Length: 159
Image 1 (cartoon, rainbow, N blue to C red):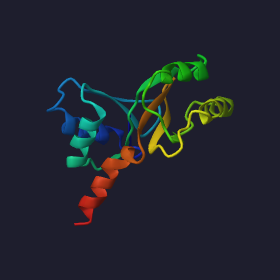
Image 2: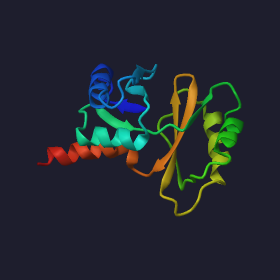
Image 3: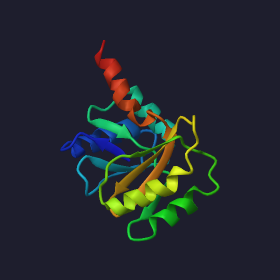
């Protein structure tokens, strides 16, 4: 998932597409019903995407969020989350909710309550929760990695 500056979704699609097309000519970038949120479907892994985008940071990209799995809204989100996390080697030390989106306060509370006991103290990875259209998606990655493109762009503008 890629977040871009609100209202710049079209430019964001072009910039990300230009940066990644050579490595994956079959990539797909789609807008979601949430302004500023794009989905990226690619054969490249997360590290490869970040490497390409940080080499030449697009002006509109704010965050690049790794998505490991999604649960459909309407199903039991807690059960889906627990079943999807079961057996994964990657733990997490922090839970981050990118934005509330379509989640009700009750659903947010249930998700937080079920995850609280799974937090590994001292782990520098974050479990990021992102509502995207009719799903709630989850990704585990190193803290701050989602903002690597923004940080690379800032470094370039300092010189």
